[in-house]
Length: 258
Length: 208
Image 1 (cartoon, rainbow over the protein chains, first blue to last red):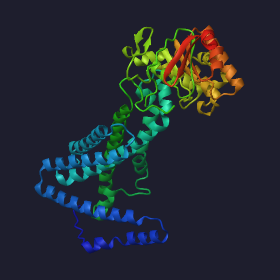
Image 2: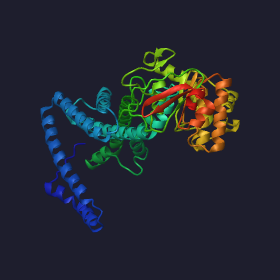
Image 3: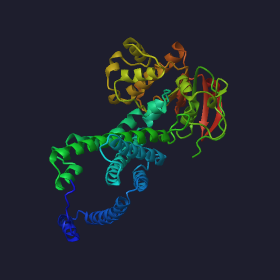
Image 4: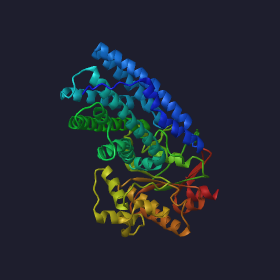
């Protein structure tokens, strides 16, 4: 499956033609997308090129310690990024760190334990990166929603606490909504996969010349592992984070306005 | 933000009322009584014991707050009543739900109504029925008639009087309406700007 595809920088640059057309349309219609799209193109170029060199070093070195270090850095960045989306959650850092770590460790551990991939940098880096990225998005969306839910439902949560409910009982609907919104995008894309959307691994393998059935099998493994890991990370982050809204005496830290 | 400052008050069993203008800190007193909040200094005692020394959840089931803003959970009124009972590990029969609705002045047909689609007055009564499912000794009622017209207000007042006399529930009523306090309460604490400015038997205090 390692059919070589040689690409020149010129070809890479030429692929921006669609972006340029979109920018031109945006300018004409005053949609103000140019700046954001420009930043997106620039950042993707810089970040991917940098990570390409880093991965090259790790592949050449072949040491698992470097792989682990890279995954730790990814979890760290993922936590910081997701934290920015969880501003209304009292202390989101630890829940996010734990959630992303569990997602990374469980996924990488599972694919190695099942013998799907050899414990080599070539496999562990992309799988780990994919899972951490998706877990970050899911946890960020979930905690963002959790913050909104708590702000909006504070009177209801406090009225339920007033009945002698525990923090967990009083915030169950809000935690459930947050969890759903964190996982719904991946659940939906998993449901429609192959119909209206071809997932990345399969596209990559087909482009690289693999047999379709091999591409499908690997894609299924990755989809299912990803679905499980992302759901677990959303679950762990919301389950840990909702406690931050309450004191030890099961009071809302930020009670509703009178 | 400081809401209460040096407030000292005694609230006996029976029907009592905290009376004062809005923003004077009355609702905060109720929140302290069932530990939805704790004071920065000083203490709140219930039956002689500092409320911070007892289990908060047990205290809230015994000294139960019905907030001013009705905030039912999704589902029918019966679902709400059953949820409340389940918090104390109890279950309520259909007849039990209807009896509780009756105590709160609601017709049995309300059991199957969507709690979120009731009028404010009906929601307040459903909140009351839900609270009664836990058989509290004390009910803390925060402005239970503030959003109601005259007729609905009279009905809630009749319900409050009935709860105190027939179910032997002590009631602490927060209201800005001195006349309402006079109609319902035998003990009155007047609150202004976070202070207590007097407490006593209703007739004595309000005559002054």
